[in-house]
Length: 392
Ligand code: SOE
Image (cartoon, rainbow, N blue to C red; front, side):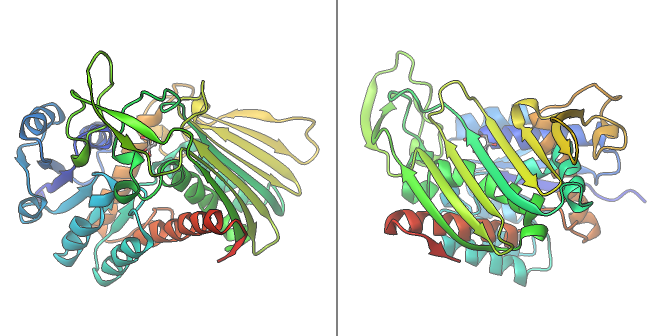
C-alpha cells in the first residue's frame, strides 16, 4: 500500500529555504527509505520573489500567510528570520503538525521556552536545525569520545569564523537587529558551536557550571540599499554594488563574541565566533583534548578528522568516507567526498523518518536542545553585561 506523500510547508525561501529544498529534492535518489514527500507550500511575503523561488525549488503552491499553509500541510519547516520562529512553530505544534525550525530557536529565552513547552505538549517531532551534527566526521568524533579513545575530557575549543561583515558598507539585514535576531555572531554562529560541543562531550563533562562572556560590535551602523529588498521581512539586504543607499540603520547586536566555560566535571571550554575574521569564509572548527588523546575538525575540511591517540607523536588525518561511516554509503564510494549541503540531506532524512515512525533518534536536536542552547546564549549575554562570571 503506497502511503500518501508527506506535504511539506516551508516558511522562508532565501538561503535556508534553498538548502532545505535541495535536501528534500535529493532524498528520493539517495535515501529511498525516507518517507515520500511533496514540496507542497512555500510561504513568504514578497509574492514575486516567492513565486520565482517556488518555481525553482519545486513547490506546488505558495502562501503569503503561514496560517493558510498550516491547514494544508503535514510537516512545517520554519526557515524564516529568528523573530518569526516562535508564533508559527507554536501554532503548528498546537495543530499537531511536526516542526523543523532553523537555529537559533528564537531571539529570546522566553520565546524559546514557549516553543519548548509547545513541543513537550505536542506528541509530534519538533527539531532544531543544528545541521553540523550530521557531518559524518563529527559522528566519527563522537564515537571516539564515547568509546573512551580520548580518555577523560579536559578541554573543548570551538570557533566559528566568517568575514562577510568585515566591509563596513556591507548591507544592513535582520541578522544585525537585536529585536529580529536576538544576537549577532553569538546566536547565529555560536549557537552551532555550543550545540556541537554539547553533542560531542556533553555526556562526558556534564552541564555548564558557570561561564564568562564578551560581546563586541565593531561597526555600529550599516547601509540599507535601495535594491536590498524588504529587509524588515527577512531580505538579506542585497549586495550593495552600485545601488544607492536608502538609509543607514543601527547595528544592535554583536559582531563577535567570546566565552569561557567551566563544566561540572572540571573540564573547560572556550568559544568564539565572528563575522570579521577576514579570510575565513565559513570556518567552523572544534577541538577536544582528553587525558589520552585529542581531535580536531574544521568545516573547511569537513570530510576529515584530525586524531591524536595515546602515544602518537602527532595528529593523524582520517578521511571519514568509508561505507561504515554514517550516511557515507548513501552517496559515493570511499574517497568521493561530500559537502556542506549534504548535512542538510542527512538532517532532513532523520527528521522526516522521525515524523513517519514517531521515533526521534537521541542524536537528533530537539526543541529541548534548542532551548538549552538558548539558555547558554542568554547567560553569555548576561555575563557580558555584568562583566563577571555567571552561574547556570
Ligand atoms: C550566516 O551566518 C549562516 O548562514 C548561518 O546562519 C548558518 O547557520 C551557517 O551554517 C552558515 O552561515
